[in-house]
Amino acid sequence: MVDNTGDGAGGGTAEGGRHIDLEADYDPLAGDAGDALDGEEENVAFIGFIEHQVEEALDPPSESIRPPEERIADLLASLPNQKDLLLKIIGYCREARSPGEVDAFTVELQKTNKSVYTPVILRKLLEDSGALVYEEPELSASAPGAAEARQANTPVPEMESDVAAAMSAGLPDDEQLYLVVEKRVEGTWLSTAAALGILDALDPITDLRALLAAEEKYSEIYLRILRYCAEEPRTKPELNALVDDDPLLQSPRRYSGAFIERLNENGALEWKPRWATTAAGLKLLREHDRAEGS
Amino acid sequence: MKMDEQTYGLEAIMKGRVATYALLVRLYRREVDQELLDEMCEMRFPVGVGNTELDEGYRLFHAYLGTVWERTLTDLAVDYARVFLGNGMNAYSAAYPFESVHTSSKRLLMQDARDEILAIYRANDLSVPESWKVGEDHISLELEFMRILTERVLRALRDEGENDMMSLLRTQYNFLMDHLVSWTPMLFAEMMKFAQTDFYRALAHLTAGFLATDREFLEDLLDEDVLDESLLAEDVSDEGLSDEDVSDEGLSDEVLSDEGLLATETGVVDD
Image (tube, rainbow over all chains, first blue to last red; front, side, top):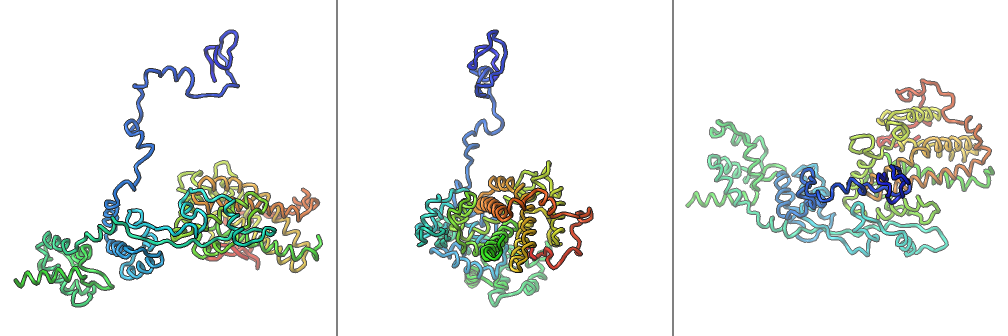
């Protein structure tokens, strides 16, 4: 360190002159510069948000702090085309399901709902949002530390335990020991209470009523499409022919696609693999017919 | 060397070398897929082989493979990209698996090392397939070169071509010392820095340990006389190559022989 006083810890020259002490450890926070700030700390300013949010900067809030209800709602809203699929997976996992079971269930649904998302990725999205949890199997039946080591940066078990595992596999001491990978016992997927709460609170009829009320001018178009698709699943050209020439849709010009999309988003129409009216859509039609009759 | 006494043992060792090089080639070439993961889960990993790097590699592989679940392939693909591809921000964003990056002052691709490597491939009647779109000094190609030469050693061993075999072994040793051993320690250090799964940490340990033991094996096999400097110089693989051989255009099709370096769809080269 640089000693200007001549009586520093490293020992100064007889003249008290400037010298460099190569023996002493350099401490960048020690010395004159630090002393000069004593008593003036209140004048020290920090840049940006750190001044007021030091703790937050050191430990930023994670996504998991947000309630799962919010995160699940965000997920469903951000993937409108997958909303129905995601909700069905949540419903399917009301009981614990193996990954294979959920895979098969999802693949079946995806036959009429093409997606770039694999079943595994859909489950990851649901897990990240707090809709699904992966229930670990009995750890003792799996590799040592399996659950912990699944996460990145988690230390793996020590060599001793691996050797012990190899020994327990029945290998004699005087021969080469080998580590044998024990297949991890499969866990199960289970829907969370928050996800099931959202699923159970869904009321497509209410949403559909709100849709028809909001677009009262086009309610007849909506109902015509629902009735038509209730007879038998219909193709898009058939629906085009059904409503596109309607005078109501000429100005402003609208096409069947807009109505199909809204009915689909609100759970009244589903693609399998033609457009078909759902149970909620049929219920709405019955409701409407009763109202018309009375 | 007494071939009669050693042929059987050598053949087994060479087969082991071929298999290990092949596995390493595959692991560095691209992300792990389900087939490879299943195969690796069936492997046995030796304990206490006498090389700390190998031991650590085997231990980490075993520990990681014991945690395989439905998202493992995605995790490994993400880590492969993180370790070897990086975000492209600068030359220090990943453990770039090219010799040129680690042997050029500005960490650039396609530098002298790549030219030397191409020359060596050509000198050994090998060429890089058109489907190979990155530098020829990629670690997986250098390891593949070692694998192919080991297969040739095996053939020479079976044909009792002792001279051929010793020549091939010397070529391997030279290549190992001049290239793989010289730059891969830097790659492994960076792999340890960027990897976030024990799988790729294990790969770094395993490769380091294997190359070290392979070097020892070759040194044991080639006695001191054979390793004489003058003899090594005489046997350098790129002997007699003209400048045309080391062009940026790569190796011409004419160079392809029946032992040419061929490409498969996966990019793994074979002979």
